[in-house]
Image (cartoon, rainbow, N blue to C red; front, side, top):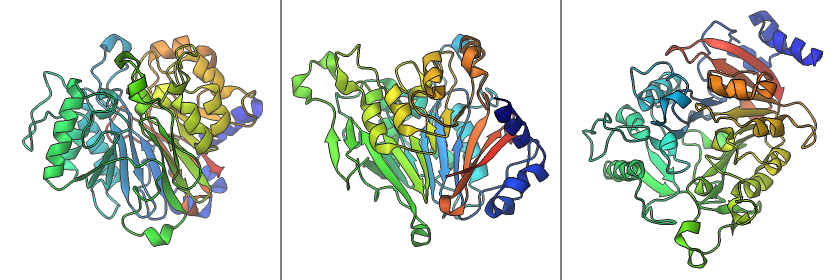
Length: 420
């Protein structure tokens, strides 16, 4: 413990201290320290931003050639007494803040647009809830929220989700937010955006758009969607859900279990994100609902994992932790139930695997910090945008926390570099 505390203080130290341990590639970016702005993305780097709005999930990846990928753009309308404050404030909708954040960080890429938007599943905290205050779009018969807000000012070239084109698995959509998202997608398709259903097992669906041959070690593997999971061989797929014909409607797979999961690879570096996949089997009565463990078995080990389902009690099971063996865990949090204490217990457990690991959250609500204090006090960070910056070739990476209380937040803390 004393060694870890010393290391942590060192990494929060001066720019000179950081430069002494940073790779030449990291040093080339200037190695700003706490209190200064983060250096913009440069060619060859992989930047993975976990955007903190206090109202849902959103991740922006800027790939080594400048290809841009956003995964989710949530805007929840949950009960305010269980939520933390809106970040940076509530003067704009969450989707508008996500859009503005993305535009700032895309300024050095080849185009200020999104090459891909991937929706992990059809829930409002990942795509945008509809409220009475959600304005009607001028581009179609849908309301502005979440990803629709993002698309108002950022062109999206391709949308990938789990349901296109019919959105009828396991049953036709009835949820207001889903119906609004479907109207948005169909309007976008009419205006030239390509829309596709995720192809599980593929590494050729989400690819570099600008200089693919120069970064041959970069690839994104589609791990799961709708209960289908990559086998780990070629582009093979196994089906974890029973045929719907064998189930009663009340037994149909829930939306979370249908989530998309992806693995980013760059040289030796690996990153995982899996929406709201869960490991809960209803006390063993429906073991096929544990898609998370099946995904982790073929995905891991990885260097950095974004936790499934915000670290909620029904996700991040022992098998996930044992197979992922991550050095860094990132929890996209914004509710009093994020994360559960037993999840933190698993993340830090030396029984599941040995070695160092650290946990960071985008916005730990005060009530959760109190309930989880036995372990949450060990987190590297409890509040802020969390950026994973991977050096050219993927040999090293660092973790940067940005202030989310103001729009153009400076660096709050910087950790690493870590070896891949």
